[in-house]
Image 1 (cartoon, rainbow, N blue to C red):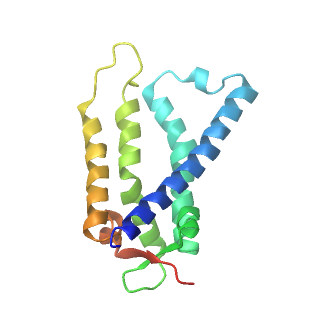
Image 2: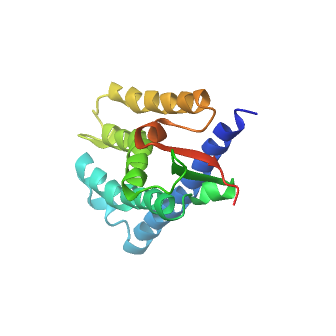
Length: 170
């Protein structure tokens, strides 16, 4: 049963992602419907889109993970699957650890935004393919392998931030 914690962690992250995507994309759709397309119809460059994504998607996602893991030791996904994150010694995370975990965990997400959007969004006519997209994909693979090697207790974000995820017995 060593892989159970790994699967639970990946499932918890998926739950968090689905919740965040539903809420944040729903808000994006609502803004577009209420304003007749603004600000989306005003974007003229990948940098403008990246700034919008950073402000309306990335910052709320970062805030969610940092706040939940610092204050409650768990996100909604972790709570649903009875997991919690602690320092390696079992104590509560510091704000720095919660921030560092989030930075490492969401690095592939943020790199993907930049690679796809800057300088020219991929969907624009004449946009050149960007082979740097393999970097975030490789990072995700490394993250998953790391989870399996540590039987789910430590991903790269845990190794770097000196944290671990365990079954919540409270």
